[in-house]
Structures are given as structure tokens and as C-alpha cells.
Image (tube, rainbow, N blue to C red; front, top):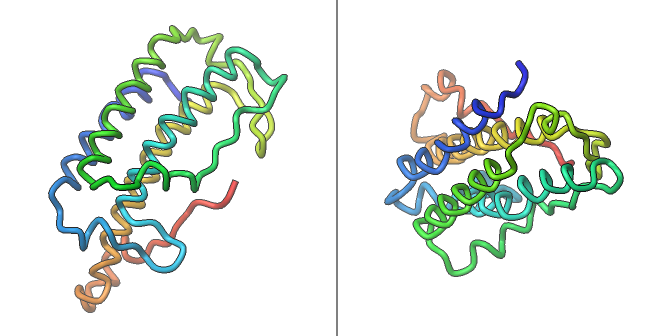
Length: 181
């Protein structure tokens, strides 16, 4: 399926409300625990989403529009979310993410992208040539990846409590899918 800007925006608009409904007010047992060594908690995932809003999607979209493939896209340190989390509760992070996403979508709309703009090319530091359309599709799929990750992290907390039903619960069979880029 090819990426259509309005379809991607429709999904991107809903992620903050989805996270709000799922996470706000939950006991820390659900949001501060992880899946083991070198894995993220739900709170860290939300901080990562804020970091991506600030330093990934729109900055890279602008770089494609301004420089094309002449220069590599700005690097994105996927672990740099730690600076967003310092001293903040999950509630604060959810608020920050909602604000950052609203700003990102406003900036995206302000670009007034044409179909020709979506086919413009940039140079990813690892992947090589990518299009603006692919970047925006990745933005939407990135949200879905982290919603899935949050579900998996939370389900992991009950992996023993569910007893033999674990074999029927796909989220408890799932392991991470992302690889380093």
C-alpha cells in the first residue's frame, strides 16, 4: 500500500489520545517496568516519541525539501530520549507528547506538500536514498511500532500471572522487531 498524506495524518493525530486513554493514571507497575536488561519502560517509550517529534520527522522532512540528497539527513540518536524524561512523570510526558505532536502536524501542514514534494529524495545516513513519502509513512508506522511495543511491555508484566493461557496470548509470545539502523 502506498502512503497517502491525509491517511498518515489521520493516524498521527490519534496517537496522543490513544496513549492518554491507555496510560494516564495507571499504577507505576505498568509504566515504570520493562522487559528486562537493555529494554525500555513505557515511560521511556513516550519520551522517545517526544524526542522523535522534536528531532526526527519534521527536521528530516525540511532537510529533504531544502537539500535533497546532496547532504545526508540529520542523524537521529534513538537513545537520546533520556534528556526528555528527567524529572518528569508519565503524565507530564503525555502532555509533552501531545503538544509536540500537535506542533509537528501543524508544521507538516504548513509545508503545503504537493505530490511532487512527496517524491523528493533525501539521503539517509544508513539507508541511502529515501523519499519524503517514505519518511512520512515511517512516521506513522513508527507510532504503530511503539503502540505495539507498549502493549508488549505491559503484557510482559503478567507473563507468569496468566498461567497456561500464555500460549493463547500473542502479545506475550512476541519479541521486539526493531533492529539497529
